[in-house]
Length: 108
Image (cartoon, rainbow, N blue to C red; front, top):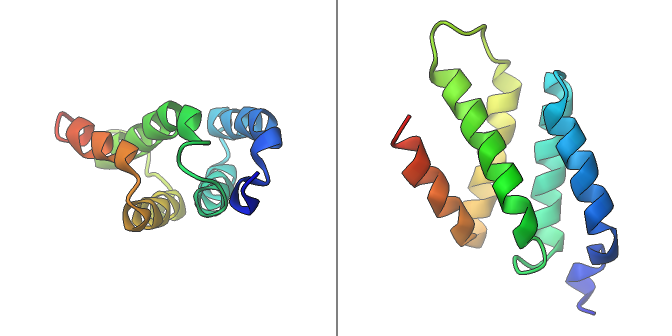
């Protein structure tokens, strides 16, 4: 096993915890989840984490859509910054799955 993919055996448990974090109403937990994702994409090969992208993309779209709506309560700026930091690292790493985010955001 590649040293970079050392956490692969724990990935199902990590994905379950990530799902729980995204379901919570805690904005602090959302920030921590995107910090975790930044670490994950640096420590795992893209091929090994491909099954988390639908969850991550849908959460990112939800956060960006809420940030753009004027009638919804103000989204904590720290959540938006956390998502942008994750997106920045992911784009630098060339993660192709995030290209869908650009396509989907044009429809919002």
